[in-house]
Amino acid sequence: MYIPKYYKITDLDEIKEFMKENSFATIVSIRKGKPIASHIPVLLNKIQDDYYLTGHLAYGNPLWKTFEDVNDILVIFNGPHAYISSSWYEQENVPTWNYQSVHVYGKASLIEGKELEHDVANLLEKYEKFRENPVLLDKLSPELVQQEMKGIKGFKIKIEEVQAAYKLSQNRNANDYATIISELYKEENPHAEAVAEAMKRNRNE
Image 1: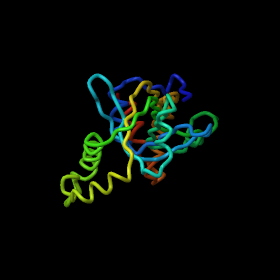
Image 2: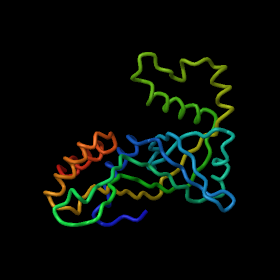
Image 3: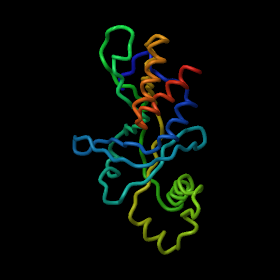
């Protein structure tokens, strides 16, 4: 990922939180010389001293069949993004786009059996635990669980390289920066508002 120095993020704790908060990721591989991608939720796990991304794909999804042959799987995490009008600047300039994104590279391998069940249980726990009637793995019938497990292929990706970019107008002066935040709130768009919030946090750190 091309990252100008203004926008490069190197704080691993911050990056890990970003991945957890934006966990619906895009997984990119190569199949027969052509890029192939899927969009799925993943979990960030620490196993001994290494970090892994884990998840599962439908059995019929050909993406998992590439894992043995491809050394570097790319996983993309995208945060909020918004158009930035140059009419908000003090000086003449061109429009741009603000965004937050993390790219992770690593080697993938398949998981199965109890390891896969444990990962699915953790995924359900993350998204169901706060609900009034949570659907957790141990609340489902063993027959249903066994049937559904036959239809998925689990995986883990050992994280070997991380690239993070938060393009949040860090190169603008204080007046422009404040104006951009104000104008983003006026857009009445959830993505624009989220970018404004990210800009406020970034400037306050």
